[in-house]
Image (cartoon, rainbow, N blue to C red; front, side, top):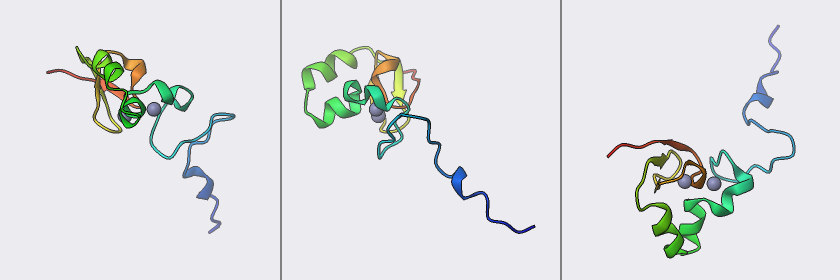
Amino acid sequence: MDEHNNLNKEFPVSDGIPIVDNLCTNPENHKTHLCELKSLKKMAQVEKLSANPKYICGNCGNLSNKEGALCAPGPYQK
Ligand SMILES: [Zn+2]
Ligand SMILES: [Zn+2]
């Protein structure tokens, strides 16, 4: 009755998708995400992707025009 069976619910592991050490919801495309571009200092791309932001990353707070350029995109309003 008191079995500890809930331990493997801690991490949502989906088949075949590598889990990175942040909260990226789309690790396969993480190298195109603003968070990664910023850490690589690709500022030209960063500027392009954040010129007219409509989305905010729930992970790091970056702003982007494109939902697909963020780890955990959510709607952003100025
Ligand atoms: Zn992010
Ligand atoms: Zn990412």
